[in-house]
Image (cartoon, rainbow, N blue to C red; front, side, top):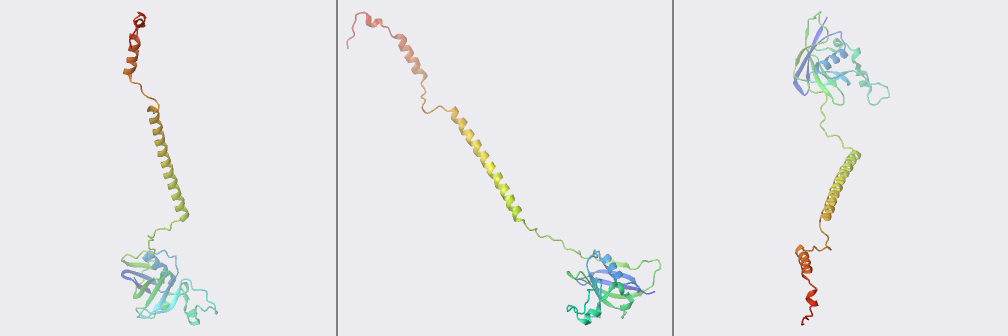
Length: 228
């Protein structure tokens, strides 16, 4: 039983290499799952194999989920409708026409991850092995999903509400300061003497009392008249 060894590299990074052994009787859908596991992708998107020539020109397409093809569907010309085949119904050996058969593998049509696949050799079957199996893994595969560092959009209503709360806090703080200043002015007013009150010097009160004590009515009772 033939065992095919394929060498797989990323189109944009040939330093990331995987080699997978797979039986000729196994399907391209099984090959697809093996590739996904080997590169660490989540296998959640659509994919297709394209048989190609030595110049990597795409030919026969084997799709994971072929589109529903209607005769009136203008998106797929008649010639192309006949070319698209289902991976699960296509065996590996069916499309090997060259000792170094090449194919292009495209995963996730929106992003178009592209891997270049080439048959490197036919190897001896290992009865104890489970196929397909990855026998070589060089280089770190790129992240399937790029990290999004964009700042999330700001909710205008939420932003206005936050501004309102900040302004309320500032207003309350200013009112508290004004109230404290007002209380301070009132206390100072109670301690200070009123402007209409005149303080009487202590010495003047003492002089008036002494003068009253020295007055004697007899000074005028002796018949002596004071000349003016």
